Length: 345
Image 1: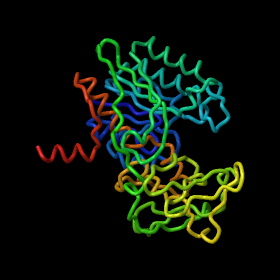
Image 2: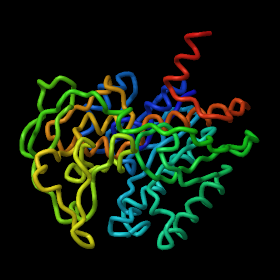
Image 3: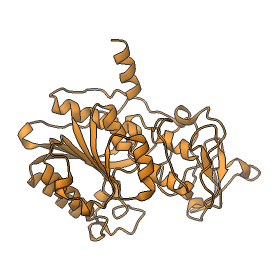
Image 4: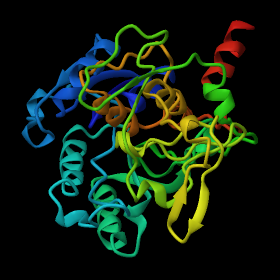
């Protein structure tokens, strides 16, 4: 089944769908700092590099079974300016709908931040859902935590799935996994990374590609909370801002001094460092074979933090495929479990 990918980024959503048996026939990414990365990992996919607003409907594949993508979320973020649909980036949802209306695939999936369900943005979001319904889709949406689907990270996102009405299918979200992956599962045993500054180029000679971390000061906002999760826990959300990357779990939890003020444990300041780019990628469940090509380290953190975790994308894609094929999946199966199952057949 062929899929059109919009706002493709580094390809987390695309890789998950590819692993579930879908073919990414067309992708769109406007950020030029990501083009090299996408092309390296999806060499056979056509990448459209213009803004979604400039995509001509005549340039899209004639037939596609699905449309996937996460319109920019900064407008809806609880940590942002809360402009929502009033922001140009928030209005890109309507461009997504424009292409959906033209292609009329069997299904679509849209991903966004939890803030889109806040009381401030809820009316605009419900209006978007109505537009999906009016062009012929049965729509189901849910606030999910990636940690429930094999991702070693607390990451809440709103997932919207639509199935074309004439198919007479009902989509149900996959059930959460009965066990959670931890930081130790994801990044335990990795070699030591190399430090890098915001002004330096990417380090090439590291034991593992992209295994470098940003050095430099920590803002008062960063120091307002504990930023260390322990080895047996799930990571904090991997964000797009390099300076907001969580701290490595080998450090002790930060100490609270007073409300909104924390500090590193005295005498152990040297044990605190940000997670490396590759560690963030592993927590986002990208395989080590997935290349991140960049000049500035901050662009590496950005493209990984903006991505949909691969394992979450895989679980959703597998469920959509089962829905379209008239099958029912009762328990989530990870990509690694699926490979083991197939090899034993």
